[in-house]
Image 1 (cartoon, rainbow over the protein chains, first blue to last red):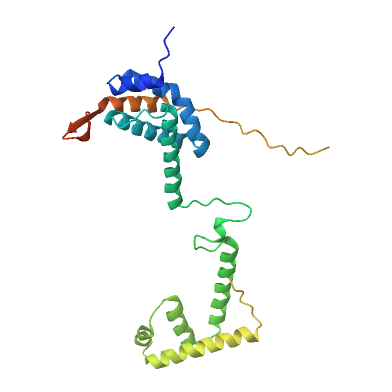
Image 2 (image 1 turned 90 degrees about the vertical axis):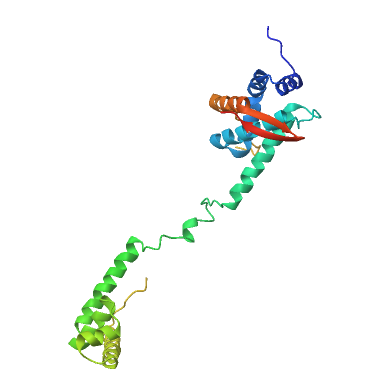
Length: 194
Length: 47
């Protein structure tokens, strides 16, 4: 029967260079420490990371001779693990995570900037209606609207392309908008907001 | 029928770190070398 050595004896042997003692210590307390960490973080891979970091601290402390045999080995290791679990949660708090629940939905405050399918259909319909209305305008006004709104040209460019002054182009634009409003009112057209 | 409001016993999940993690720690320990210089302790890693 194998003699069960006390933790303190194994620690002493390890400090004196016996690597096998460390292996026994890790295997002896593996389940206890891992389960302790897991009960806090509830994630297997984070548990592995914290377990590893815990024993790296243990190894460094023992090898540097900074370990004082004041208490028991296991409570000391569990205290290190506990501190690392706290560090883990602190680090995570700096990168906030949001989980949706009944009271709060993250998608109510963020969006991808695109319209949803219904709003896109409404927008397409409005754009189509506006094009029909523009068709009703006199040619010179239609031309200015088309250059300004659809070709994104400046009034300077419009005046150069149409051979009229900037003021005339501005005036045509103004009348085009007035006439469009009149057409909308006369025909009782409702352009739904989206 | 009466409703039972007793809290369920929380089951403690027993898990163990992977053998690879344990092996890593043993290798880390073997490769670690402490140099004592003028009262200061330096860590070295022999790889």
